[in-house]
Length: 240
Image 1 (cartoon, rainbow, N blue to C red):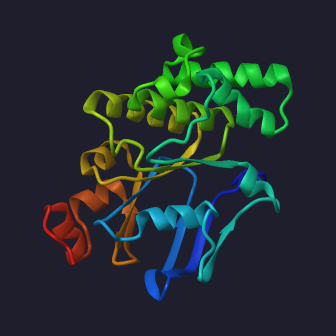
Image 2 (tube, rainbow, N blue to C red; image 1 turned 180 degrees about the vertical axis):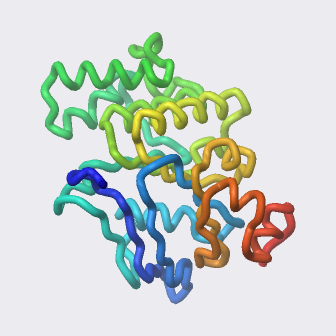
């Protein structure tokens, strides 16, 4: 039985989003449960990042709705998001992790404990006093993950967190994702890296031209996709 205070499952019902008369997403109906990471994949322009932002309530749908389980008001407090290009404060590494914890109203001792745990998780403890904007690209992304993890969200949205990283930095981020998932954080992530999705995903949502064409366990999707668009996409063919 689902714990009474969880915000999952997350449900999208007939979700649509249009800008300037251009329909980006249409009729997206989706249920995301607790468990291993959910990956949103598909060709460029499929609507993955827009869907992620709609689910996180950064965008307001032009049709349909997004709903969470649990008590009213809990969902906003118990989710976080990390973007492809992290936005860091002009402060130290440690201060970047402490700042959202202070905004959340946590006591000083609890802020210090969580910040330390977050930096330990991503391997940045030794750089706690360094200006955040002097970190490498991979280190900045790990800092963004530490900042999100310190909030202890039940759901963490990740939008192409490895898109501009080299293989070593990508591996470090993947290890953090695995660690967060292992401790119970629900990861919902977009990626263009099919190898990454194969390594990390528990289930896959395949989008094409603004619609969800498949949602299935990752093993099933990669072994036997159900639509010709997914078959072509996995073969590396252009999908229009």
